[in-house]
Amino acid sequence: MAVEKPKEQDLYAPVKSLLQSQGYEVKGEVGAADVVARRAGEEPVVVELKLGFSLALVHQGVARQALTDAVYLAVPRGQGRRWLGALKQMKVLLRRLGLGLILVRLKDGHVEIALDPAPYTPRKSKPRKARLLREFARREGDPQVGGAARNGAMMTAYRQDCLRLAAHLASHGPCKGAAVAKATGVEVATRMMRDDHYGWFERVEVGVYGLTPNGAKALAPAAAKRTD
Image 1 (spheres, rainbow, N blue to C red):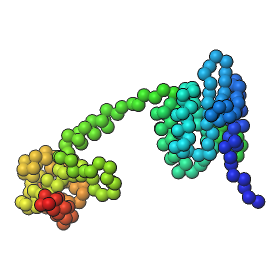
Image 2 (tube, rainbow, N blue to C red; image 1 turned 180 degrees about the vertical axis):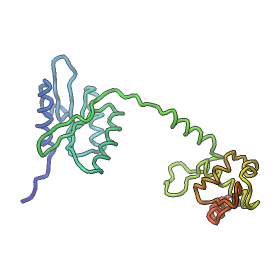
Image 3 (cartoon, helix red, strand yellow; image 1 turned 90 degrees about the horizontal axis):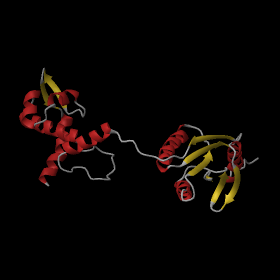
Image 4 (cartoon, rainbow, N blue to C red; image 1 turned 120 degrees about the vertical axis):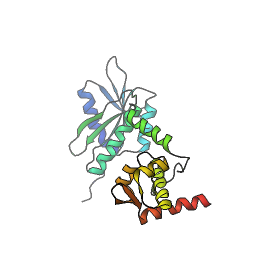
């Protein structure tokens, strides 16, 4: 026997019961809204019903904000890591838009208010802003095309510094870290070569570092670009 697919109207009764339990009078399909609820002396509550997260659902919610600030989106509650990940991302978006979210467990009609609509003021992260501006200031030129897919090595300021160290070692052979730092202007040269994030450097003896084959290989594209 074929299992009947859920429909948007299956969400209506559980959502209506929830709102009625809070003292609202509830009616469906009023104007453009799927659900409208009224309580004496308060702004109306509008709920849009959909079977899943979508941009169309978000657009509907934003459009209903022309009617009231109390706008909720209602969807069936899913399960699994993928759905929970989508829920987390959607809540971030809805919180920024000032929209609420209702989850309905269709098998038993259990309803959960996952998010209430409220004005949103984004919190600024001073550490993240500082890292952004520091990277901007340290990066030489504009080596990375904006919008390019990040499936290759990003030309960050750190990578640019590593290329400077590698170029010096390629020209002078193994050197003491202090000498590399002085010659390249990269003050933390010794630490960077010791950490060897890219596999370009190797310690020849205490305090002395040389270039690995991978390091020499990494210099080739940079040299080719300079000769173009």
